[in-house]
Image (cartoon, rainbow, N blue to C red):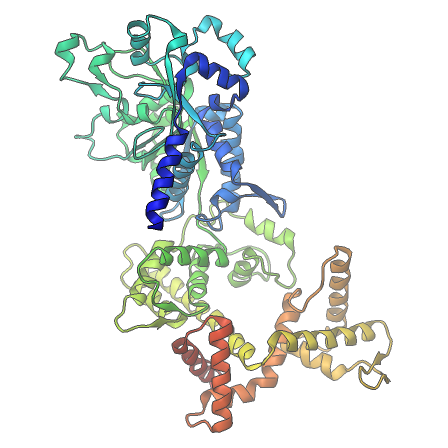
Amino acid sequence: MDILKRISAYKAESEKLAWTGTFKEYIELLKRDPAPAMTAHARVYEMIESYGVVEDDGRKKYKFFEQEIFGLDRSVEQLVEEYFHSAARRLDVRKRILLLMGPVSGGKSTIVTMLKKGLEQFSRTDRGAVYAIKGCPMHEDPLHLIPHELRADAERELGVRIEGNLCPSCQMRLRTDFEGDIENVLVERVLISEDNRVGIGTFSPSDPKSQDIADLTGSIDFSTITEYGSESDPRAYRFDGELNKANRGIMEFQEMLKCDEKFLWNLLSLTQEGNFKAGRFALISADELIIAHTNETEYRSFISNKKNEALQSRMIVMPVPYNLRVSEEEKIYSKLIGQSDMKHIHIAPHSLRAAAIFSILTRLKETKKQGMDLVKKMRMYDGEEVEGYKEADLKEMQSEYMEEGMTGIDPRYVINRISSALIKQDLACINALDVLRALKDGLDHHPSITREERERFLNFISIARKEYDMLAKKEIQKAFVYSYEESAHTLFENYLDNIESYCNWTKIKDPLTGEEMDPDERLMRSIEEQIGVSENAKKAFREEILIRISSYSRKGKKFEYNSHDRLREAIEKKLFTDLKDVVKITTSTKTPDERQLKRINEVTTRLIDEHGYCPVCANELLRYVGSLLNR
């Protein structure tokens, strides 16, 4: 019954939003709040802003996109600031078609769908309210009723801008139904709705031989032509084309550059002058944001044709590349799997990460920066610290290739292969090895990769496997140490106390006896050797740690064991080394004794309760790490 109550409440809310009044009453409404008179571009921008904006490392992140779009913060910021914000301020970019260009499955369609759905919801708010001449097939702006000679005065009085002319239908109704009395023309509040064809139009190319221009601009109503006697009579015309219905909102062109030329020429006047030609009428005004999307191949073909120069000059092209961050790629897969009916199958931790590592590696380009390989680059892109490289190096790499992210393995391929692994019969859980195996098997049947690409991709799968092996060992390590964080923190604090004493030429106090002692060189070296710090380099490494601590302190931040990438790795490896023999014997023995069995059960329970494993993948992880340690 709860869902029925919600449906009833939703219906009641929609009815509450309904408003009908005269043009005179609408003018009074605008005097109180001119927001309803904003343009379609401004309404879309206001909608995006209404969800909130946060500053992150000098960049703007728009909350509107964060639930569906992952890893494209730079592209989204460029899209909102350079197009939507500028267009909302009536700059000339609003007279351009917004063309999202990028690889397949990169998020172009998702962005458009989000904008359309967001605009629908925004039109139900006070700020996003849309009012139209009642009965107008194009849901026209009521301010078009004001004669051109009086508009300057009206704009000053209301604090708005008035652009456009009455559509042919409203011109006739004003004469015949209202005898020119503008004050009494009825105005109503309309809700943007793609389903009801209010404020959102969608055009998809089909067979050029059968598709009619009427799909865009409307058509003659032959059933009434005999009654009204003329094709130029608005009553004998259906204003039901996508450009008509998209007025006041968004017009989406799917795979725009695949459209026949005759459909694209209609956009020349619409983008620049805000009107289009339909039937035997004068130019019809339309206020709509035209957004299209296409892939790079289609776009290159389009711009190579000199005949398209006029239309090309009326476009703002926004690249939408693939995501290049592993952690964000995981979110894409989680979202897509969450939308399926396979949620009952458990996916072991790090399985999606292994797939994401493979995907990102296929999209990255080799950098010219010395000592930087793809794995290090991948880690830096994902926000990790890499020894010897700074923020400036990251920004330099991000600007090194403008086309980075426009090629590589797409999320659809990966999710198809994960689906293949999920759908196997009698499978309660899949792990990273299942996912990587499915990705590898799929390369044999991938229709568009060359032999050279296949070999390169197989190498990336091997790298993803090695990365997973390290994650698996760390997972077991954490599970074997009863309180991993506490043990790591204790070892970390001991190390810091010793290097501080070493660098400052002071003694260190024994915490139990209070006795002053020399720094524990054996402890420090046992940690530093885990990451290959040589005897000659130990002093520089220790001093670097102290400098980092000082830097954190100045910024009011606490320096933890995982604040320094290499030190974190050293601490983890030291803990694991101390436990290695215990882990090796416990995980690989075929007939564990009572003590070992108890330890295995404790570790399994910890993996399940604290690390997100199920009984199946927890036992598989134990066996797998045991085999790794025995190699």
